[in-house]
Image (cartoon, rainbow, N blue to C red; front, side, top):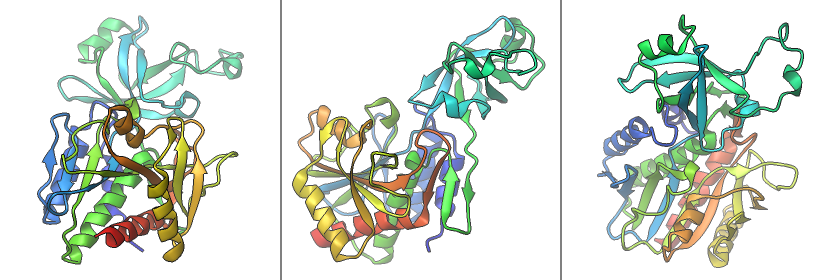
Length: 336
């Protein structure tokens, strides 16, 4: 089994969309420590060539879901707007950090308005929406002025606590396995190739705006012809995937992925006895679909470990992560 310290460390770094610099710096420094020469794109993504003139890019996204302060209510609680598709039913009761403009951090909790059942017997019937919810700040504040004196204001970033746990059973449960588990796959790919002393025409790419749809649109090397996206595999009643396999996506909401590329991946999984499931994701988009919409002339495929309860309190298994690493390695070794 692999060492998962880098996954744990990356997940611990808050990186909701628009606030990814610290996580990108971690990736940059980690790849440098492996002996590579990563670089930043103009938008702040990290890319790293594993050899000269890369023709294959393998991408994962480092940004996560979160929220942003959109107003201060007269009673001293915060209204908020979502960064990406955070599930509010799953976010209710979650602890958060509020990062002010000056960098000071306060803590708080996402709650429904009038949250005490002893004062609100309609609580369970209320629809969870940003209009019916607020953030309670862990400070003695009773008014808008009290909150403003703390330095909290509109535009401050709200980071949801991750609750990472690595279990003896092989399961890992945490927020934001979508898609820091995918980033971990890229870490391991780079580490193993360096360990083997192998240079390949591959670029690994850590996008930083995937959750809002434009992370994977630009920034790749001009020589890239194929894009393999590593992102979470969907689990659900209408899906085939599971947490101990690598999901190979045939189609998502944006349409089908490249058939021949997908076929090669399936054949390699069969040949190497890598556990996999081919799947169709009913409500999903990726950096691959964003890259295609942006007009990139790439052949695109999408794979990833199965992740349960996506955009909520997620869970995957080391077997699924390792299957995804193994399939990436098999594809790179076959091509180069």
